[in-house]
Length: 111
Image (cartoon, rainbow, N blue to C red; front, side, top):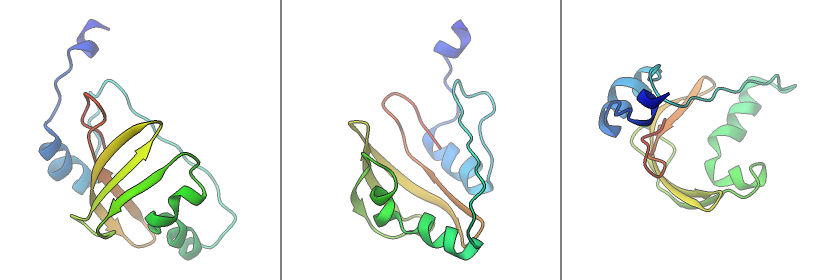
């Protein structure tokens, strides 16, 4: 447990380039989350909802999009959730398959 408190994994730049852009996660990270669900809709409709980042507050209560310069690799998103502002950069945007971004949480790099 103590080792988790002092974990100093890859830098945010390394997480972005060598993990997020390659669809990998840092298995040694002290926290991880994965969620899956079955959605009764065609994949193109699901992708349309997920990739409409400006529309996320419509289905993600408490989330605010503060700035968005494009949903594309390298595109930047500044958003707020749970009282925390996060600056993210999109890493992978593959229509119908994957939407991945990186961004530090207070005190922790995140993907």
